Image (cartoon, rainbow, N blue to C red):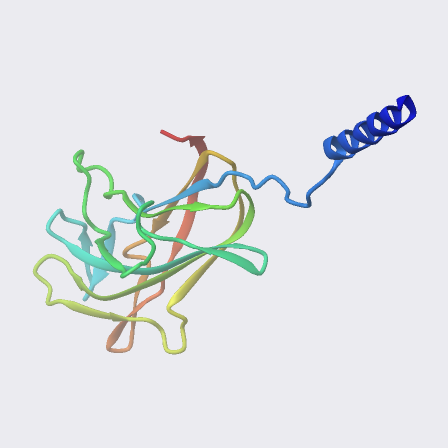
Length: 204
């Protein structure tokens, strides 16, 4: 009887040891981070020459830029970006890139994307950007077009980090007037967008 008890006890200890050391194959899934993308006009770009006249930006000017898609790439993989944390589709939104902030000294800042994404190192930000008309001063509305053959998508190739439970804020500046170039009888929208800053902050 004691031998049977010893065998059962030994078997139980072996089973418990295997249970403690057993790996199920299900690894810890990291918490997501948040990717927030801010777009605004380049504060250094405030003048344009129209018909040999130098024009300075005014608070009444309008240049609506349409943002309709966003992706953040990790190599070949990507995460879709959406306007807010509680939306899961992107109908596209338009922003007056010439609007001034309350100080009147800077262009208005717009949050164009804010999305939960997996943590890691990203290598590309891709944004769909178009526009069709520039309205400034007393000039007639100026139609603008993408150059023939240009993709609707703009690729910004740079490395940035997204960390668990943190917010990565990417600050983009679009040069509103340097992006508009006269070509024969039309104006082309040469989308000049630069990454001004990348910052990782705590979540609210």
